[in-house]
Image 1 (spheres, helix red, strand yellow):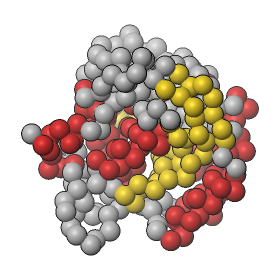
Image 2 (cartoon, one colour):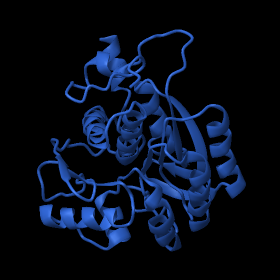
Image 3 (spheres, one colour):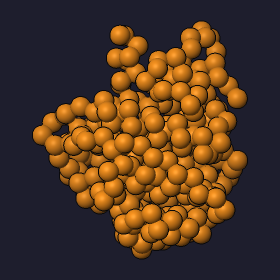
Length: 296
């Protein structure tokens, strides 16, 4: 486990600067993590959110842009899908030369894009941890995935995933289970795992019946529960991307999936606590709290 650039102490307070900021080792190459996702013109979610977390956790971020969105703090106005050969070419170019220790996906838009990424991952990414964040819609409810792509996501990408991280709206679309309590959350975890990923994480941030934010992780045998206080803020844009990105960083450092999720859960909680207003709508969660802590 490489801890020269990032020491992810799963028992440490992530607000402490030391465990999370990179240690300066001039001339040495940090670990590399790739995000395969959509670009957010407002900078709150997508690739932009992923790269902020990568940087704040001492990881060199590589990208494969799958789509370009036209969005701001109040919603998504539209999006443009990147040509398939350009998407797969980005993945191949990075893996063949720079190399990566983990990757995560976000907005993939279409069945054709998902299939192309899955084929490329089977040939180039096998053995590398892959976190699949099955982004189906924006936090405003604007669609970011064509309905016809849902089955491709289930059949082609989920079986390649080390971990899938759907929120409750995505759970309902993918496995047709409405999570309202601990029992249905377990039912959803079992159904997601049956689609082929090594691990399934059912995020409970949207479970408004709870005063907490309970997440449930399942590997087909054992459940792991992660609980955190619910941060009362309207500025939660990019929270799902940030959690998946932090998990990928931890996996790149060799952490087990439960330990990686435990770290990411605390990370996103602090990012929610530091969230800021932006524009007329929902502001983003903020990985930049690291800079404030460092400067204080």
